[in-house]
Image (tube, rainbow, N blue to C red):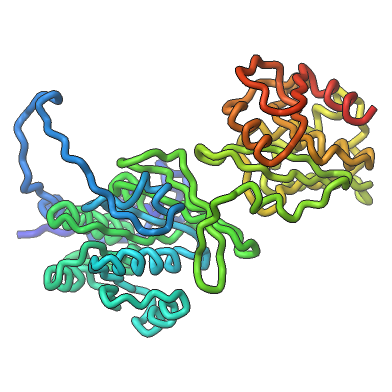
Length: 449
Protein backbone atom coordinates (compact mmCIF):
# COMPACT_ATOMS: atom_id res chain seq x y z
CA UNK A 1 0.00 0.00 0.00
CA UNK A 2 1.36 3.42 -0.97
CA UNK A 3 1.95 5.74 1.95
CA UNK A 4 1.56 9.47 1.38
CA UNK A 5 2.59 12.27 3.67
CA UNK A 6 2.63 16.04 3.47
CA UNK A 7 5.97 17.81 3.18
CA UNK A 8 7.15 21.33 2.48
CA UNK A 9 9.41 21.62 -0.57
CA UNK A 10 11.52 24.58 -1.72
CA UNK A 11 10.51 25.60 -5.25
CA UNK A 12 14.07 26.62 -6.13
CA UNK A 13 16.35 23.87 -4.85
CA UNK A 14 14.01 21.03 -3.85
CA UNK A 15 14.97 21.07 -0.16
CA UNK A 16 12.40 19.16 1.91
CA UNK A 17 11.22 20.00 5.40
CA UNK A 18 8.57 18.41 7.65
CA UNK A 19 7.33 21.91 8.54
CA UNK A 20 7.09 25.29 6.86
CA UNK A 21 10.24 27.46 6.98
CA UNK A 22 10.42 31.12 6.07
CA UNK A 23 13.93 30.94 4.61
CA UNK A 24 15.36 27.91 2.84
CA UNK A 25 18.54 26.76 4.64
CA UNK A 26 19.95 25.38 1.39
CA UNK A 27 19.49 28.15 -1.21
CA UNK A 28 18.66 31.09 1.15
CA UNK A 29 15.45 32.04 -0.71
CA UNK A 30 12.58 33.46 1.32
CA UNK A 31 8.97 32.19 1.17
CA UNK A 32 9.94 29.48 -1.32
CA UNK A 33 8.28 26.49 0.41
CA UNK A 34 5.11 24.94 -0.96
CA UNK A 35 3.02 22.07 0.32
CA UNK A 36 3.30 18.80 -1.59
CA UNK A 37 2.29 15.21 -1.11
CA UNK A 38 5.31 12.92 -0.99
CA UNK A 39 5.02 9.21 -1.75
CA UNK A 40 7.53 7.05 0.06
CA UNK A 41 7.56 4.51 -2.77
CA UNK A 42 8.09 7.10 -5.54
CA UNK A 43 11.62 5.87 -6.10
CA UNK A 44 10.22 2.62 -7.46
CA UNK A 45 9.10 4.42 -10.59
CA UNK A 46 12.72 4.91 -11.59
CA UNK A 47 14.05 1.42 -10.96
CA UNK A 48 16.52 0.65 -13.73
CA UNK A 49 15.86 -2.39 -15.90
CA UNK A 50 19.37 -2.23 -17.36
CA UNK A 51 21.94 -3.95 -15.14
CA UNK A 52 25.64 -4.28 -15.95
CA UNK A 53 28.39 -6.28 -14.33
CA UNK A 54 31.64 -4.74 -13.18
CA UNK A 55 33.95 -4.44 -16.19
CA UNK A 56 37.36 -2.94 -16.91
CA UNK A 57 37.32 0.34 -18.79
CA UNK A 58 39.68 -1.13 -21.40
CA UNK A 59 37.15 -3.86 -22.24
CA UNK A 60 34.27 -1.50 -22.98
CA UNK A 61 33.40 -1.19 -26.67
CA UNK A 62 32.52 2.34 -27.72
CA UNK A 63 30.10 2.87 -30.58
CA UNK A 64 30.57 5.69 -33.05
CA UNK A 65 27.84 8.26 -32.50
CA UNK A 66 26.28 9.56 -35.70
CA UNK A 67 24.96 13.01 -34.90
CA UNK A 68 21.88 14.53 -36.52
CA UNK A 69 22.71 17.83 -38.17
CA UNK A 70 20.02 20.49 -38.11
CA UNK A 71 21.15 22.73 -40.96
CA UNK A 72 21.61 25.63 -38.53
CA UNK A 73 25.39 25.77 -38.31
CA UNK A 74 25.52 27.86 -35.14
CA UNK A 75 23.05 25.53 -33.40
CA UNK A 76 25.09 22.46 -34.38
CA UNK A 77 28.29 24.17 -33.20
CA UNK A 78 26.94 24.69 -29.67
CA UNK A 79 25.78 21.07 -29.44
CA UNK A 80 29.23 19.83 -30.47
CA UNK A 81 28.52 19.03 -34.13
CA UNK A 82 24.85 18.08 -34.09
CA UNK A 83 22.17 16.36 -32.03
CA UNK A 84 23.13 13.10 -30.32
CA UNK A 85 20.42 10.41 -30.65
CA UNK A 86 18.64 9.37 -27.43
CA UNK A 87 19.87 12.50 -25.66
CA UNK A 88 17.88 14.94 -23.51
CA UNK A 89 18.59 18.64 -23.98
CA UNK A 90 17.22 21.47 -21.86
CA UNK A 91 16.97 24.93 -23.44
CA UNK A 92 16.18 27.94 -21.30
CA UNK A 93 15.78 31.65 -21.86
CA UNK A 94 13.65 34.68 -21.11
CA UNK A 95 10.12 34.91 -22.53
CA UNK A 96 10.15 36.12 -26.12
CA UNK A 97 13.86 35.55 -26.71
CA UNK A 98 13.18 32.96 -29.42
CA UNK A 99 13.22 29.50 -27.81
CA UNK A 100 10.10 28.27 -29.60
CA UNK A 101 11.21 29.95 -32.81
CA UNK A 102 14.55 28.18 -33.03
CA UNK A 103 13.06 24.82 -32.03
CA UNK A 104 10.40 25.20 -34.71
CA UNK A 105 13.13 25.86 -37.28
CA UNK A 106 15.17 22.89 -36.02
CA UNK A 107 12.09 20.66 -36.20
CA UNK A 108 11.45 21.69 -39.78
CA UNK A 109 15.06 21.23 -40.88
CA UNK A 110 15.19 17.71 -39.44
CA UNK A 111 11.77 16.69 -40.77
CA UNK A 112 12.78 17.81 -44.26
CA UNK A 113 15.29 14.93 -44.21
CA UNK A 114 12.47 12.37 -43.83
CA UNK A 115 12.83 12.20 -40.05
CA UNK A 116 9.64 12.36 -38.01
CA UNK A 117 9.46 15.15 -35.46
CA UNK A 118 6.79 15.62 -32.80
CA UNK A 119 6.35 19.06 -31.23
CA UNK A 120 4.45 18.85 -27.93
CA UNK A 121 3.01 22.29 -27.23
CA UNK A 122 1.67 22.52 -23.69
CA UNK A 123 1.31 26.32 -23.70
CA UNK A 124 -0.09 27.08 -27.16
CA UNK A 125 -2.70 25.54 -29.41
CA UNK A 126 -1.73 23.74 -32.60
CA UNK A 127 -3.30 26.63 -34.53
CA UNK A 128 -0.99 29.15 -32.89
CA UNK A 129 2.01 26.96 -33.61
CA UNK A 130 0.86 26.57 -37.22
CA UNK A 131 0.81 30.37 -37.63
CA UNK A 132 4.41 30.58 -36.42
CA UNK A 133 5.44 27.72 -38.68
CA UNK A 134 3.89 29.46 -41.69
CA UNK A 135 5.82 32.64 -40.92
CA UNK A 136 9.03 30.62 -40.66
CA UNK A 137 8.31 28.49 -43.71
CA UNK A 138 8.34 25.34 -41.54
CA UNK A 139 5.63 23.22 -43.17
CA UNK A 140 7.23 19.82 -43.70
CA UNK A 141 4.91 16.79 -43.88
CA UNK A 142 6.97 14.91 -41.28
CA UNK A 143 6.57 17.75 -38.77
CA UNK A 144 3.80 16.70 -36.35
CA UNK A 145 2.11 18.71 -33.58
CA UNK A 146 0.16 17.85 -30.46
CA UNK A 147 -1.33 20.19 -27.86
CA UNK A 148 -1.21 18.13 -24.66
CA UNK A 149 -0.18 18.68 -21.05
CA UNK A 150 -0.35 15.10 -19.77
CA UNK A 151 2.96 13.30 -20.30
CA UNK A 152 1.32 9.89 -20.05
CA UNK A 153 -0.80 10.72 -23.10
CA UNK A 154 2.25 12.10 -24.93
CA UNK A 155 4.16 8.85 -24.34
CA UNK A 156 1.23 6.85 -25.74
CA UNK A 157 1.20 9.00 -28.90
CA UNK A 158 4.96 8.67 -29.30
CA UNK A 159 4.71 4.87 -29.20
CA UNK A 160 2.18 4.91 -32.07
CA UNK A 161 4.43 6.38 -34.78
CA UNK A 162 7.95 6.53 -33.24
CA UNK A 163 9.35 10.00 -34.05
CA UNK A 164 13.11 10.54 -34.00
CA UNK A 165 12.87 13.89 -32.22
CA UNK A 166 10.36 15.11 -29.62
CA UNK A 167 10.19 18.69 -28.33
CA UNK A 168 8.33 19.42 -25.07
CA UNK A 169 7.41 23.08 -24.69
CA UNK A 170 7.63 23.48 -21.74
CA UNK A 171 8.65 21.25 -18.83
CA UNK A 172 6.90 23.57 -16.34
CA UNK A 173 3.48 23.06 -17.99
CA UNK A 174 3.35 19.25 -18.37
CA UNK A 175 2.44 16.79 -15.65
CA UNK A 176 2.25 13.12 -14.72
CA UNK A 177 -1.09 11.75 -13.58
CA UNK A 178 0.32 9.80 -10.64
CA UNK A 179 1.96 12.91 -9.11
CA UNK A 180 -0.65 14.75 -7.01
CA UNK A 181 0.97 18.22 -7.21
CA UNK A 182 0.21 20.85 -9.84
CA UNK A 183 2.21 21.37 -13.07
CA UNK A 184 5.29 23.49 -12.49
CA UNK A 185 5.78 22.33 -8.91
CA UNK A 186 9.09 20.92 -7.76
CA UNK A 187 7.83 17.33 -7.72
CA UNK A 188 6.17 17.54 -11.14
CA UNK A 189 9.18 19.11 -12.83
CA UNK A 190 11.61 16.65 -11.30
CA UNK A 191 9.49 13.54 -11.88
CA UNK A 192 8.46 14.60 -15.40
CA UNK A 193 12.06 15.21 -16.44
CA UNK A 194 13.05 11.86 -14.93
CA UNK A 195 10.34 10.06 -16.88
CA UNK A 196 11.38 11.76 -20.11
CA UNK A 197 15.02 10.82 -19.56
CA UNK A 198 14.05 7.21 -18.81
CA UNK A 199 11.83 7.09 -21.90
CA UNK A 200 14.54 8.60 -24.13
CA UNK A 201 17.22 6.13 -23.07
CA UNK A 202 14.84 3.17 -23.38
CA UNK A 203 13.46 4.02 -26.84
CA UNK A 204 16.45 5.85 -28.39
CA UNK A 205 14.30 8.91 -29.15
CA UNK A 206 15.90 12.35 -28.81
CA UNK A 207 14.13 14.92 -26.61
CA UNK A 208 14.35 18.69 -26.30
CA UNK A 209 12.60 20.31 -23.35
CA UNK A 210 12.03 24.03 -22.90
CA UNK A 211 12.52 25.51 -19.43
CA UNK A 212 11.26 28.80 -18.04
CA UNK A 213 13.74 31.05 -16.26
CA UNK A 214 13.53 33.01 -13.01
CA UNK A 215 14.08 36.75 -12.70
CA UNK A 216 17.74 36.01 -11.94
CA UNK A 217 18.06 34.27 -15.32
CA UNK A 218 18.32 30.70 -13.97
CA UNK A 219 16.09 27.87 -15.16
CA UNK A 220 13.06 27.62 -12.88
CA UNK A 221 12.50 24.46 -10.88
CA UNK A 222 14.75 22.20 -8.84
CA UNK A 223 18.47 22.29 -9.56
CA UNK A 224 18.36 18.54 -10.10
CA UNK A 225 16.70 19.28 -13.46
CA UNK A 226 19.96 20.61 -14.90
CA UNK A 227 21.94 17.73 -13.40
CA UNK A 228 19.57 15.17 -14.90
CA UNK A 229 19.67 16.19 -18.57
CA UNK A 230 22.54 15.60 -20.99
CA UNK A 231 22.85 19.15 -22.28
CA UNK A 232 21.82 22.54 -20.92
CA UNK A 233 21.82 25.52 -23.28
CA UNK A 234 20.72 29.08 -22.62
CA UNK A 235 19.26 31.37 -25.25
CA UNK A 236 20.31 34.93 -24.48
CA UNK A 237 19.64 38.28 -26.04
CA UNK A 238 18.11 41.69 -25.54
CA UNK A 239 14.68 42.11 -27.11
CA UNK A 240 15.78 45.54 -28.27
CA UNK A 241 18.62 43.99 -30.28
CA UNK A 242 18.27 41.77 -33.32
CA UNK A 243 20.90 39.21 -32.35
CA UNK A 244 20.69 36.20 -30.03
CA UNK A 245 23.39 34.11 -28.36
CA UNK A 246 23.06 30.38 -27.79
CA UNK A 247 25.40 29.23 -25.02
CA UNK A 248 25.98 25.73 -23.61
CA UNK A 249 26.61 25.53 -19.86
CA UNK A 250 26.61 21.73 -19.77
CA UNK A 251 27.27 19.23 -22.56
CA UNK A 252 28.02 15.57 -22.01
CA UNK A 253 28.78 15.09 -25.71
CA UNK A 254 30.85 18.15 -26.53
CA UNK A 255 32.54 21.32 -25.37
CA UNK A 256 30.89 24.12 -23.41
CA UNK A 257 33.33 26.66 -24.86
CA UNK A 258 31.32 27.32 -28.01
CA UNK A 259 28.55 29.84 -28.58
CA UNK A 260 26.17 30.36 -31.46
CA UNK A 261 25.20 33.79 -32.77
CA UNK A 262 21.87 34.32 -34.55
CA UNK A 263 20.17 37.32 -36.07
CA UNK A 264 16.44 37.64 -35.53
CA UNK A 265 14.66 38.43 -38.79
CA UNK A 266 11.05 38.45 -39.98
CA UNK A 267 11.50 34.90 -41.28
CA UNK A 268 13.12 33.54 -38.12
CA UNK A 269 16.65 33.16 -36.80
CA UNK A 270 19.58 33.32 -39.20
CA UNK A 271 23.16 32.15 -38.63
CA UNK A 272 25.72 34.93 -38.26
CA UNK A 273 29.05 33.70 -39.61
CA UNK A 274 31.17 36.88 -39.62
CA UNK A 275 30.70 38.00 -36.04
CA UNK A 276 33.18 40.87 -35.99
CA UNK A 277 31.65 42.63 -38.99
CA UNK A 278 28.25 42.18 -37.38
CA UNK A 279 29.23 44.08 -34.22
CA UNK A 280 31.45 46.84 -35.64
CA UNK A 281 29.81 47.51 -39.00
CA UNK A 282 28.09 50.71 -37.77
CA UNK A 283 30.87 52.20 -35.66
CA UNK A 284 31.74 55.87 -36.06
CA UNK A 285 35.47 56.53 -36.38
CA UNK A 286 37.44 59.46 -34.94
CA UNK A 287 34.96 60.19 -32.16
CA UNK A 288 36.08 60.70 -28.53
CA UNK A 289 35.06 57.91 -26.16
CA UNK A 290 35.44 54.98 -28.54
CA UNK A 291 38.03 52.18 -28.39
CA UNK A 292 38.33 48.78 -30.08
CA UNK A 293 38.75 45.43 -28.36
CA UNK A 294 38.93 41.77 -29.44
CA UNK A 295 36.96 39.52 -27.09
CA UNK A 296 36.88 35.72 -27.03
CA UNK A 297 33.46 34.07 -27.03
CA UNK A 298 33.84 30.31 -26.91
CA UNK A 299 36.75 29.63 -29.23
CA UNK A 300 36.10 32.54 -31.60
CA UNK A 301 37.55 36.05 -31.42
CA UNK A 302 35.08 38.90 -31.95
CA UNK A 303 35.88 42.57 -32.49
CA UNK A 304 33.70 44.93 -30.45
CA UNK A 305 33.56 48.65 -29.85
CA UNK A 306 33.75 49.97 -26.29
CA UNK A 307 32.01 53.31 -25.87
CA UNK A 308 32.38 55.67 -22.92
CA UNK A 309 30.74 58.97 -22.03
CA UNK A 310 32.18 61.17 -19.28
CA UNK A 311 30.01 64.16 -18.37
CA UNK A 312 30.03 66.71 -15.56
CA UNK A 313 27.74 65.55 -12.75
CA UNK A 314 24.93 67.84 -11.60
CA UNK A 315 24.45 65.95 -8.36
CA UNK A 316 26.59 65.28 -5.31
CA UNK A 317 26.87 61.59 -6.11
CA UNK A 318 28.16 60.94 -9.67
CA UNK A 319 26.63 58.05 -11.59
CA UNK A 320 28.55 54.99 -12.79
CA UNK A 321 26.59 52.93 -15.30
CA UNK A 322 27.85 50.01 -17.39
CA UNK A 323 26.02 48.10 -20.11
CA UNK A 324 27.70 44.97 -21.42
CA UNK A 325 30.48 45.01 -18.80
CA UNK A 326 30.49 44.46 -15.04
CA UNK A 327 29.57 47.61 -13.13
CA UNK A 328 31.89 46.70 -10.25
CA UNK A 329 34.75 46.34 -12.72
CA UNK A 330 33.99 49.83 -14.01
CA UNK A 331 34.21 51.25 -10.49
CA UNK A 332 37.57 49.54 -10.01
CA UNK A 333 38.99 50.99 -13.25
CA UNK A 334 37.77 54.48 -12.38
CA UNK A 335 39.48 54.21 -9.00
CA UNK A 336 42.76 53.21 -10.69
CA UNK A 337 42.52 56.19 -13.08
CA UNK A 338 41.91 58.57 -10.18
CA UNK A 339 44.69 57.18 -7.98
CA UNK A 340 47.46 56.40 -10.47
CA UNK A 341 46.89 59.13 -13.05
CA UNK A 342 45.44 61.88 -10.84
CA UNK A 343 42.36 62.19 -13.04
CA UNK A 344 39.55 64.08 -11.22
CA UNK A 345 36.74 61.72 -12.19
CA UNK A 346 35.03 61.98 -8.79
CA UNK A 347 32.78 64.79 -10.03
CA UNK A 348 31.85 63.22 -13.39
CA UNK A 349 29.14 60.81 -14.48
CA UNK A 350 30.65 57.88 -16.37
CA UNK A 351 28.71 55.63 -18.74
CA UNK A 352 30.25 52.63 -20.52
CA UNK A 353 28.57 50.55 -23.21
CA UNK A 354 29.53 47.63 -25.45
CA UNK A 355 28.13 48.59 -28.85
CA UNK A 356 25.78 45.99 -30.29
CA UNK A 357 24.56 44.65 -26.95
CA UNK A 358 27.19 41.96 -26.41
CA UNK A 359 28.05 41.16 -22.78
CA UNK A 360 31.76 40.92 -21.91
CA UNK A 361 32.82 39.17 -18.72
CA UNK A 362 36.57 38.79 -19.25
CA UNK A 363 39.04 41.22 -17.66
CA UNK A 364 41.02 41.48 -20.91
CA UNK A 365 38.73 44.39 -21.81
CA UNK A 366 40.07 46.57 -18.96
CA UNK A 367 42.55 48.48 -21.10
CA UNK A 368 39.98 49.23 -23.82
CA UNK A 369 37.47 50.46 -21.22
CA UNK A 370 40.03 52.69 -19.52
CA UNK A 371 41.22 54.18 -22.81
CA UNK A 372 37.64 54.93 -23.88
CA UNK A 373 37.01 56.71 -20.56
CA UNK A 374 40.18 58.82 -20.88
CA UNK A 375 39.33 59.61 -24.52
CA UNK A 376 35.90 60.92 -23.56
CA UNK A 377 37.22 62.79 -20.52
CA UNK A 378 39.88 64.61 -22.56
CA UNK A 379 37.62 64.87 -25.63
CA UNK A 380 40.39 63.43 -27.83
CA UNK A 381 39.58 60.58 -30.24
CA UNK A 382 41.69 57.44 -30.39
CA UNK A 383 43.13 56.04 -33.60
CA UNK A 384 40.39 53.96 -35.22
CA UNK A 385 42.94 51.43 -36.48
CA UNK A 386 44.23 50.60 -32.99
CA UNK A 387 43.02 47.90 -30.63
CA UNK A 388 43.58 47.67 -26.87
CA UNK A 389 43.95 44.35 -25.05
CA UNK A 390 45.00 43.83 -21.43
CA UNK A 391 43.89 43.43 -17.84
CA UNK A 392 44.57 46.30 -15.46
CA UNK A 393 45.70 45.54 -11.92
CA UNK A 394 45.10 47.72 -8.87
CA UNK A 395 48.65 49.07 -9.17
CA UNK A 396 48.00 50.26 -12.71
CA UNK A 397 50.03 47.47 -14.30
CA UNK A 398 48.94 45.76 -17.54
CA UNK A 399 48.64 42.04 -16.98
CA UNK A 400 48.71 39.26 -19.57
CA UNK A 401 45.55 37.72 -21.05
CA UNK A 402 44.68 34.43 -22.70
CA UNK A 403 44.43 33.72 -26.45
CA UNK A 404 46.39 36.84 -27.34
CA UNK A 405 47.65 35.53 -30.69
CA UNK A 406 44.12 34.55 -31.76
CA UNK A 407 42.93 38.06 -30.91
CA UNK A 408 45.72 39.68 -32.91
CA UNK A 409 45.04 37.38 -35.86
CA UNK A 410 41.43 38.56 -35.90
CA UNK A 411 42.63 42.16 -35.72
CA UNK A 412 44.83 41.52 -38.75
CA UNK A 413 41.88 40.08 -40.68
CA UNK A 414 39.92 43.26 -39.93
CA UNK A 415 42.79 45.49 -41.15
CA UNK A 416 43.77 46.97 -37.78
CA UNK A 417 47.33 48.29 -37.87
CA UNK A 418 48.36 48.74 -34.24
CA UNK A 419 47.73 46.94 -30.96
CA UNK A 420 48.49 47.88 -27.35
CA UNK A 421 49.10 44.68 -25.42
CA UNK A 422 50.79 43.50 -22.19
CA UNK A 423 54.50 42.74 -22.15
CA UNK A 424 54.65 39.20 -23.50
CA UNK A 425 56.73 37.26 -25.99
CA UNK A 426 54.81 36.54 -29.17
CA UNK A 427 55.69 33.78 -31.59
CA UNK A 428 54.37 35.79 -34.52
CA UNK A 429 53.96 39.52 -35.07
CA UNK A 430 50.87 39.76 -37.24
CA UNK A 431 50.22 43.52 -37.16
CA UNK A 432 52.31 46.40 -38.47
CA UNK A 433 52.93 47.74 -34.95
CA UNK A 434 52.75 45.88 -31.66
CA UNK A 435 53.15 48.13 -28.60
CA UNK A 436 53.92 46.24 -25.40
CA UNK A 437 53.15 48.39 -22.38
CA UNK A 438 53.94 47.66 -18.71
CA UNK A 439 51.56 50.23 -17.20
CA UNK A 440 48.36 52.05 -18.05
CA UNK A 441 50.18 55.36 -17.76
CA UNK A 442 52.42 54.40 -20.71
CA UNK A 443 49.46 53.78 -23.02
CA UNK A 444 47.86 57.11 -22.10
CA UNK A 445 51.10 59.01 -22.68
CA UNK A 446 51.52 57.44 -26.13
CA UNK A 447 47.93 58.05 -27.23
CA UNK A 448 47.17 61.48 -25.78
CA UNK A 449 50.46 63.35 -25.28
